Image (cartoon, rainbow, N blue to C red):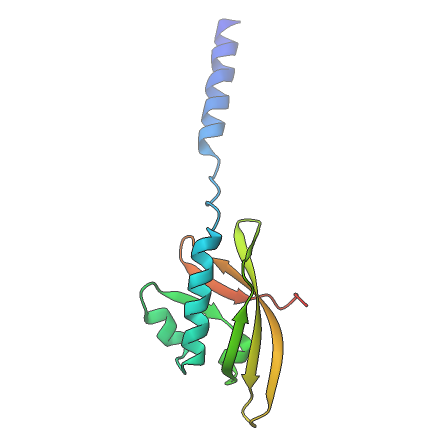
Length: 126
């Protein structure tokens, strides 16, 4: 009986110690300035590669940027919202396409800072 109980305790201890730990949540106060830095880089004519070479390195996947659209202006919502362990932030974009046509779009970005800064546009958000 004592052996079975000891074995059970050892197994439970082993299994709880071997489970993967979840990464910590992104801090919304940190996510906003990082998103602003990325958008300012786009607005200033930098490339996503330039942004990735900066400190801190920011990886941004933005289809309008990579397709050559210029960011003329942007307005970020006052705050982002924690969604899972990442932050979602709504931004109003003023874009100019290659033909010179200007359009306004609402975009939602998903920001992650752990283990590195990655910003992606949520293509499913309205």
